[in-house]
Amino acid sequence: MTGRLLGVGVGPGDPELLTMKAVRIINESPVIAYVSAGGRPSMARQIAAQCLAPGQLEINLTLPMQPIPEIAQAAYEEGAARIGAELERGRDVAVLCEGDPFIYGSFAQLLDLLGERYPTEVVPGIASFTAAAAAARMPLVGRSQALTVLPATLPADELAARLARADAAVILKLGRHFAKVREVVEELGLLDRTIYVEHASAARERVVPLAALAVHEAPYFSLLLLPADRRS
Amino acid sequence: MTGRLLGVGVGPGDPELLTMKAVRIINESPVIAYVSAGGRPSMARQIAAQCLAPGQLEINLTLPMQPIPEIAQAAYEEGAARIGAELERGRDVAVLCEGDPFIYGSFAQLLDLLGERYPTEVVPGIASFTAAAAAARMPLVGRSQALTVLPATLPADELAARLARADAAVILKLGRHFAKVREVVEELGLLDRTIYVEHASAARERVVPLAALAVHEAPYFSLLLLPADRRS
Picture 1: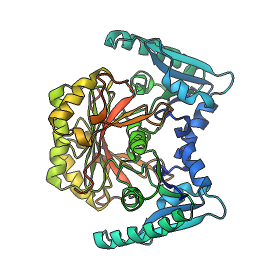
Picture 2 (picture 1 turned 135 degrees about the horizontal axis):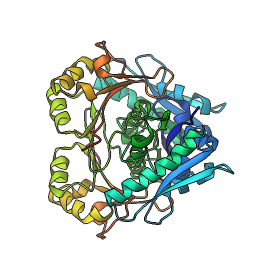
Picture 3 (picture 1 turned 60 degrees about the vertical axis):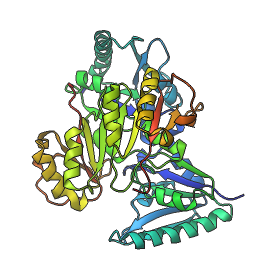
C-alpha cells in the first residue's frame, strides 16, 4: 500500500480561512510538503503553521528567485522524488498550497510527476480573489454576468482585449507587472471602478481604490478587482 | 450600537469545507438568515447545520419557485426588513450563503438593501468550481492562462463566443439550460475535454466526462469544467 498524494488549499493568508477538512488532513499527515521561492519562507507553511503536528517530516521544495523554467522543473523533479519516496513507504504527503491548489497553483506540476503512480486527493481552498472581494465588501459577479480571471503576466494588448470584453474581472499576481496593468486599466477608462487589494485576509491586508494608489510596484500577493456593474 | 450584517460563505456542500472562521461566526451569531426557493429547504442551512447554536433566531427568506424579478425583490425587501429589525436591536445576523457570498450569491441583494445602514463583514467561502476541479483532480488554470466563469443562463451565441476565446472555462448553474450548453460545447469541438460535475463535494457528488453523459436535464448545482490545455 502506497501513501496518498494530498493537495491541500490553505487559503489566502488568514489561518482561520483554512477549511476544517484542510486542518484535519494537514494535522493527520505524517509528511507535509511545500514550495518556497527565492530563499523566502513558504507562505503556505506560515498560513498552516497552527495545524502542524509534532514529529511531521517536512519537505521544502525550494525554487530559485528568478523563474527559469529548466531550474524550476529540476526543483520540482527533485521534490517529487522526495515525496515519491515517502509515498512508497506508505506515508500520506500533504502538499500545502496557497489559495486553491488548482487556480494557478504549483500543485499541478507535482500532479504531473506523481499523479499517475499514486492515489491523489485534493482539498479546495479559498481563492485569493474571493477573499479580496470579501475584504472590499464588493459583490464580484451575479445574474447572467461572466467573470474573467486574468494573470498580470499577460501582454498588455491581450490584457486590454480581454478586459474590454469582460463583465467582471480580476487581475492576479501583480508584482512587477503592476505599472503595465495600471496603464491598461487607465486606457480602457476603468480606473474609477477598479479596487486594489494587497494580502487579502492577512494581518497586513490593504484595500484601496486604484485611482488613489500612488505606487509603481506591488507585492506578488496583490490583485485588482473590477466588479461587474450591479445594474447591468 | 447596531448589530453587524455578516455574509458567510458555507462552501459547496461538504460541511467539512466550511472555514474555521465561518464555523465560529455562525456559531456566535444570535441570528442566522438564509434563502430558500420554491418551498425546498435551504441548502446553505443544511450545509451549516452542525455549526448552529441552541436558541438562535432563524430568518428564512423564501423565494418563489419561478424567478419572477418583482416577487423575488419583494421577498428580499421583506427579508431585509426582518434582518434590519434584529440589527437595530444590536444583534449580529449571519447570512448563510452557498459557495462564496460574492460569486453569484444572493447576498448582494441584501447588501444593497442593508449595507449602507449597518456595518458589514463578509467571510469568503469555497466556490463550487474549485471544489469541482478538486473532485475531478484536474488543474483548472495555470501560468499565463485566463479563466472564464460563465453562467449557463447566457444565450447560446454569447456562450459560444466567450467559450471560443477562453483558455480555461467553467459553466455554472446548468439546470434547465443543460441541453443548450451541451450543444454549444459540442459545436465548438470541446466535448472531449469537458467534465460534468454534479453536487461537488457533497455525498451525492458525481464526476463524468460530458461525452459519456446521456441526460438532457441537470440539477441546478451542476457545472461543466473545461480545464486549460496543460501544454500551452
